[in-house]
Image (cartoon, rainbow, N blue to C red):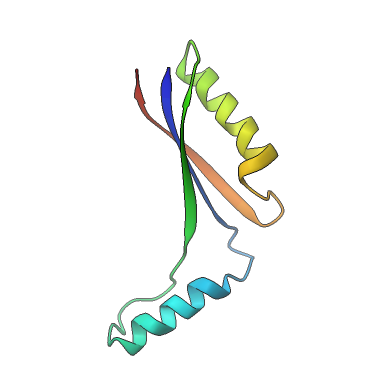
Length: 83
């Protein structure tokens, strides 16, 4: 069994108004050196698989079908640990 984390975020070409609002608030707090704020979400789950490759393949299929809107979002997968 493998612990998997999938990070999902907007593609570079997609406007993220929530991140823009956060960046504006950061600047109003006086942190002018911070820019290009991005935000996203992540999912943690366990995958029963016999290899790391199989675990990543399953996580990728789930991400394509459910976790990420592939038209607007991209994702990357990290294996956190094997049980």
